[in-house]
Image (tube, rainbow, N blue to C red; front, side, top):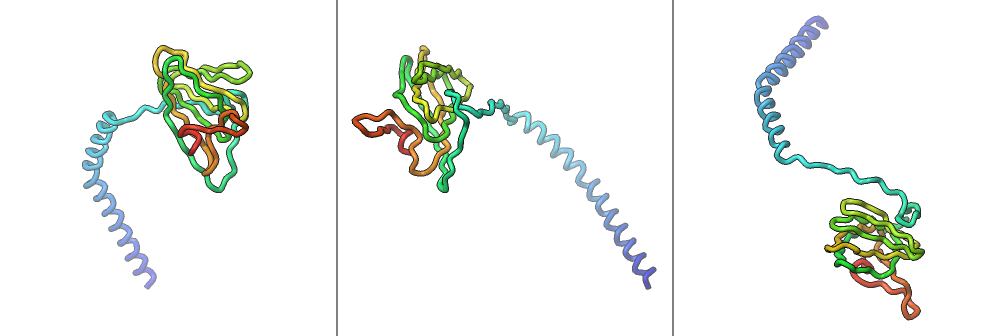
Length: 174
């Protein structure tokens, strides 16, 4: 009886194997055509990835730190600064990532140090060092600011005025 079961099992396995080989032959031309179509489609729609540098310190030399919060929020803004424009002094109590879309961003620290971030470059903004941005170019400066924060925590702080910490703009109210 065992010999009969073994022969049946072998016959079934052979039939399944033959069926798989046959299905591969039948779908091969369709697969080849599909692969050919995909390659030509990829050539029309393929993207280019330009890696940006990993950042571990701010423009003031502070180490990158993440907030420990139960309510994380990532917010972002695109800022435009006209030629000759200067922002108010500020700090960021949350990690602030900047990508310059157009122009050159001059980050001026309170101690007089400066760092220029050119179009296409990235930087982390200072957390505890007062700084401001300047556009010393002839055209508009545009940059993307991304903040890794928490609900209820402002992403930008300005120096105290009239004895209170002042915040303003959409950056401060996220």
